[in-house]
Length: 75
Image (cartoon, rainbow, N blue to C red):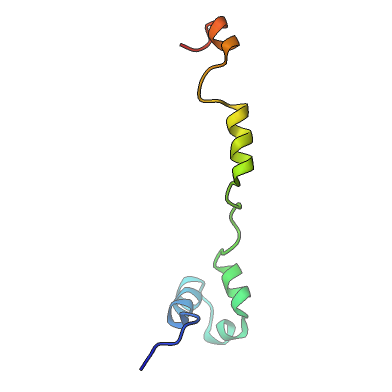
């Protein structure tokens, strides 16, 4: 018999009932999106995009600028 792709219901039930302390009726009343939100999915900051990294590299270069070297701020 082949396993069907989809939600890992046992893991989600453990997370909701044991982890969040939900009663079974409360767990089953939630939509999957609501449960994932309660578990913290999607609450973190978005990953840095390449254009943001490039802007940071331009603003804070790894190598000292000519002016910094002349001023003696970096060795």
